Length: 116
Length: 115
Image 1: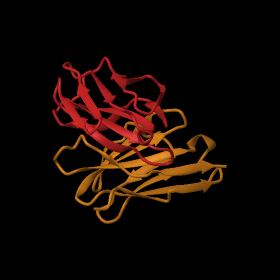
Image 2 (image 1 turned 30 degrees about the horizontal axis):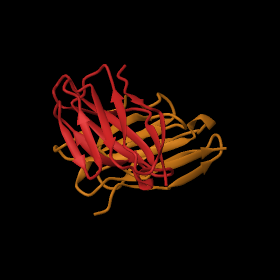
Image 3 (image 1 turned 90 degrees about the vertical axis):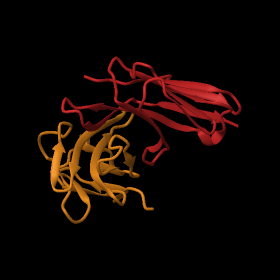
Image 4 (image 1 turned 135 degrees about the vertical axis):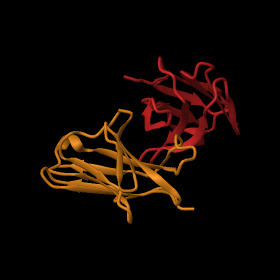
């Protein structure tokens, strides 16, 4: 069974602080996606990383895909109250035939609270 | 561009009734996925469909649950004879045809409450 472990599970910080959340697995993924979900809403896609070692930046958010494509991290610089939410990572795998499996494997998420 | 649309957003059913959840994918997307999110749990894959075809239903419970994506109209997730344990948020996602299939865009979800 493929699992994605996210840590920490909860994180409460003050506005302006930096933070990193992690997404780890013993499985290799062909790509990994990060989403943010707010209460009562669906996950909103932040980024997709595909290549081992890839780093993508989205304003104050920096995403990294591990060299072995088994893990990923999300770093937020100078967090703001608007960053509050549930951050989810999700991995995709390829089938034996080479195409995408279709389904995403989700971690349980990191619940971030940024206090003003 | 309209995103993935789901309705209803909230659905209340009594035990034994049927629940029908609808999903319209983003324009130009022909791959649809259904996920279920239980309280304090991560999203769990249920089924993957393309137009008129079920590609992977490995995450669907064997009984009472079915899904379709007809040639015309939205994808439907149907739950027959609902039980309290079916109470959850059900999310639909879509992805484009034959391009970047692994990136999935999610709808706002349907919150099902079974009384």
